[in-house]
Structure formats: structure tokens, C-alpha cells
Figure 1 (cartoon, one colour):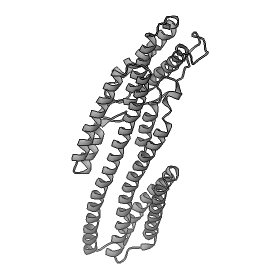
Figure 2 (spheres, helix red, strand yellow):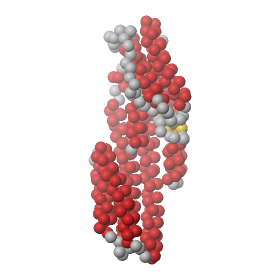
Figure 3 (tube, one colour):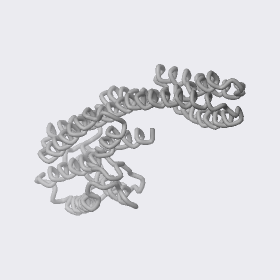
Length: 336
């Protein structure tokens, strides 16, 4: 779920575009498309949890069936708790209740660990015969084989949710790019960036669809991150790159305005902020952010955004602030 939070943070960071906020009134689109992404991730987590629950309860049933002297009291109670947790998670997913889902998932994980510990203790204390050990070993082997297959299917659900989220992230940037273009901004560089993101996503989708086991699926997922998060794969930093490119395009549009000369100081300050963000992104490349790099990039973009938004309003007659007013400063901007 942490990965899901990172992706949503990255998608929301794309909102740092530059013309007045009313020009980007696509919140209906954002809400409409974010909901299926959240639901897809929730369903994928539920699928994985179901695999784990079936393994836990199946192992308990096998131990009770195969070992005559095993104490059933504690392990049966543990198994019932897991089934109750799973029912609650199914209800949460059906109700699209993300908050309660997280709470119940935490309970499941705690109960699952307890069940595993209690089952091992019960098996040890039962002092099984050689025949009982052999029978239980075979049953557990079959359960693990089923679990492995189940987890691969669940992993495919997670992969599909990742592709869906990335695709929606690209579409959101495309929508805002279209808005910028309608305002007379040159969006050539933005469209090239979007095209590269689409190509990258296509390559990822192909790698995922060709995976035949969980290891291959995991390797494909770790090979490319549209934002930030791949330890050894490619991190495209699409939110930061698209925001930087959009801000620069808007600033270039401002520079071309015949009346922009009186704002040369603010324009220079905004350009410095964008250059700083660009230099940091170049240093990061396709690696993960290190140290303060992520904060440095988004602080610079946030500062440039405040200045460019002010200049856009001034030069288009939408604002009343003086050209010398200072730009907003923030140290809390983040993104990927």
C-alpha cells in the first residue's frame, strides 16, 4: 500500500501547472479516474490476502486432520479469526472503504503471524508419528503449490493496477498539456515527454504480460517506475519532469510577451528556480532520489510556480498584485 501512496502523491504533484487554477478545472476527471485505481489496488491486496488466508486455514485443517493428538483449541480459534478478518476485508473492498480496509488488513496480518506461531507450536507439542509427519508434509506441500499459483494471479492484478495508474497519470498530464496549448503555450517538449512515457508504459505492459511466474512479474515491476521507487530499474520521474517542462513552457510564453520587460527580475528568479530543478533532475537521472534531491526539486518547482502564476495573471490582466511582490516560498513540496 505504501507504493500506492507514492504513486498517488506523484499523480497529484502534476497539478503544479502554471496558468490560473480555473484553467485546470478537471477535478471531476481526476476523481472519476482515481477511484478505479484505488479500487484496483485494494482488490489486488485483497487477492493476496486471500491467498495467505487460504494457506493459513488450510494448514490448520491439514494438521488437525493428519495428527490425532494435536491440541485443536488454539489453532482452531486462530483459524476462525483469520476467516473473520478476511470477511471484513471483503466487505471493506465491496464498500470501497479504504480507511477501514487498512485497519482490518493490519488486524489480519497480526492474526496471521499469531496463527503461524501457534500452529508450529501445536505441531511440535503433538509429537507426531513418522506417518503423520509424512502425511502432513505432503498436504502442506500441496497447499504451498496452490498458494504459489494464487499469488501469481494476485500479482497480475497488482500489475494491472499499476499499469492503470500510470496510464491515468499520463492522461492527466495530456489533458493539462492540451489546456496549455489552448492558451498559446508551445507544448512541443511536453508532448515529446508524454510520448516517451507512453512508450515506456507500453514496454512495461509487454514485460508484465509475458511473465509466467511471480519472480518474472516482480522483476518486470521493478524494471520501470513512472515516478520514483525502483531500486535498480528505471525511474522516469514523470511528475517532476512534466511539471518542469510545463513551467518552462509557460515562462517562455511570458518572456515572449511585449510587456514582460518590466518583470525581468521576477522572470530571472523563476528561470533560476527552474534551472536549479533541472540540474538536480539531471543529476538524479533514472536513479532514485537520494538525500534532499526530491525536496530540492519540488521546492524549486513550487517557487517557480508561484512566480509564474503571478506573472501570468499580471500580463493577462487577471491579477492586481504589483510586479515586485515576492513569490511564495515553501520547503514542503514533494513529488516524484
